[in-house]
Length: 465
Ligand code: C2E
Ligand code: MG
Ligand code: MG
Image (cartoon, rainbow, N blue to C red; front, side, top):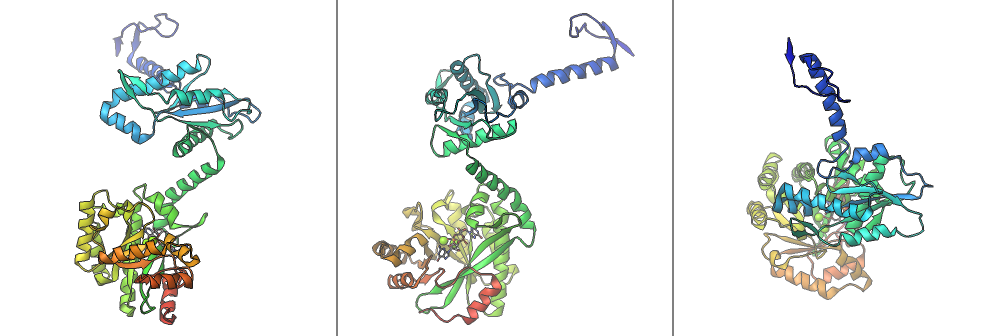
């Protein structure tokens, strides 16, 4: 079927197809939109500046002998931008970005091409002869963005971070942009107005990324994660009364990764949920097995405060004790109190319900960071674990025995049992015993060990006096 279309001028302006078939029109429209799309794909729709793709197409990696460098500026970090977005809306946020681009353009002048490489970031290449720590222009940009951006007459504070990449640092344009972003973030975290790309910190970012991407596989594999158990000794009897379950990860390429590293990363993602589920399953099952073997010990399990914010955490843990036929008294839950409480009513409620059925609750690493004294009295807990940073100096005579004595008195006043962590030698053991701690944990008595080794140790160990 033939149909009459509008008189569309193809490139060149002549009216070549006043009448055309539907098929032909469709084909031509597709071609046009591909061209349009290609053009749109090279520009940012908010600032109309060339975008990341343009940068990559236009720039070969900067060779080592070049006298120019890459600068990337990020206007704000994500939380700050989200606040602007929430308070003032999308339109205003786009004005903020455009105002940033204008300010940068005014400073750099027409000869420097500015690329809008991600929502909040702009990149450009400037001359650099390697003699100065950073070219003057970089310091000027930093100073300029100290002043708020004016959008609709409202001054909005920026949180500019500037990343710099030396010539020859990397061999792909996409990598250079990523490196500049890493540098900007590094600078921001150190509160510096600009920072050079540094391979070492980039390696740390990459390692963190590998850890997070490999964790789900580790949870499914049955030979990467394991729990080791470290004895806790009663100072009066010298006997083991409990063990702490400590997670170990043997990564197929990276080797042993300490929990202090991967738990902290997982807590920033949803992965902390399945990790804790894995730990709870294994440790409650282990507690059940030891209960049947007649070992008279409790198993203390580390949980992240984020887990306690989950609505059914208590019910799941109680369910596990039921499934594995474990007396609730044999399970203790440890968490670090400094970061615990985003929703105290909810968290305290869960802890109280766990204690109602006989489980114990321990406050971990007490004194290591921020301790909220008003919360301390309200946390439904049974045990206070004094951070190991207090223990070591006691053995050398440089420790603050008076302070530890006060912590012990405070804990006892709150009806908490006191556990001292990090006892590495007899001196420390003796000092903490004389300060009336109830239990101790540390390499002096035993290191964390696989469950089979623990059973042997438990059966053979002489009381520590
Ligand atoms: P934490 O809960 O305070 O665990 C005690 C840490 O001190 C363990 O480190 C233990 O190996 C170490 N330690 C014990 N005795 C001594 C000693 O005498 N001297 C020294 N220098 N260190 C000693 P680890 O196993 O590397 O765990 C580090 C942290 O990672 C734990 O601190 C805990 O916060 C976290 N973590 C470990 N396993 C888990 C887990 O299953 N779940 C969660 N959420 N966190 C865990
Ligand atoms: Mg602990
Ligand atoms: Mg601890």
